[in-house]
Length: 495
Image (cartoon, rainbow, N blue to C red; front, side, top):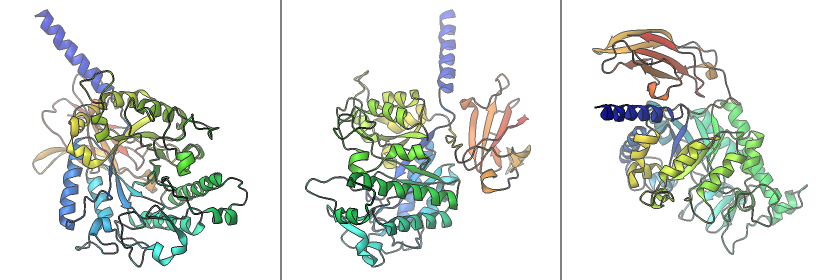
């Protein structure tokens, strides 16, 4: 009997310890891309049905942010003032959805209903991809062919031109003015990925516009730097609560590269700094970006780019802004855990991620892969790593003032069921308003502590919350969250 009791107690102690090891704040994102062709050949209704199914599963898996691709090649998956509808949506560039559907507006609504953030994901430089055979007449590359250059069957908006920087900022400002997005997100395509035998045709521009630069590579980095700074400024000016994030290629620089006199990792792959002309460390140092999601898609043991090595490198060099890890779902489950040959690498990757103090979350490449659940990846998110809800990481450099606490908390019967009901706190400006609420539940014997992650029973945008099950004698705490998830003081009510 004593042995059974000891095992029972050990079990519950382990459950308690396990529950409290989860971070209360963690970015848990997923990319939903258009360039994989998942929309093609479907009606708008069929696309919506597919995306609803994906979002429902992602919500169950604990995903709290969607990075939704809305500009792949100077086009739009929203009602743009400047660019044509995307061929990835309707099959033909410039042709609108048959029923007048606006995917971005719809996605924002769907995400917010599920207490997820929605970040509009754009590509700033790509004007035409290899698979696009025709551009719409209103496309910027057709209206201003002098602003693009050809490279490896693609068209690229020339980063050297101020007109292109201004145009991209206009596109972003248009999104901000017409859509309630939580973030603007750009991916890893800056100057084009190098292709053997291809030369970037910008030497004439360098000689004409590169005053003050002896080296064309420094000049190219300067061109990208100016765009990143300009995007940061236009976002802060237009909607200061909107986050600006970048998901760069996973290697910044290789320490073994002869050109490298600055920071570098023990890797030997493509480089942000030298090959794509993206000085990511500078951007976060200057405060031009609000979060980084380096695409560390490789497995532990990959000679050229080891996941463990790169997580440690980014943790050490990019700590001035929140850092999240881009996870490759399919590649992870194909790898073998070096500590357990019977398992894939998800468990060890998450252990590394959560042990490093500057890493505050991850983003899944890609959403549909999570839904497909290879190697029980989604199941492990749902049952283990995302078992409890998480608030978004703080961004005090944007705003650190918490909203006021909810008012008039009481118990009421709605539609025949008991609910917690409250009124929104008053807020002067947009940054002071409450947009979500956290509901905590504590049993009679529990210590009331809102840092206890396992006590969170709900996140909601409503001002009411159903009381489920037997809650007699339980204490509930309700707090308010603003747009940046600053959390108010709690209001207590006991049943």
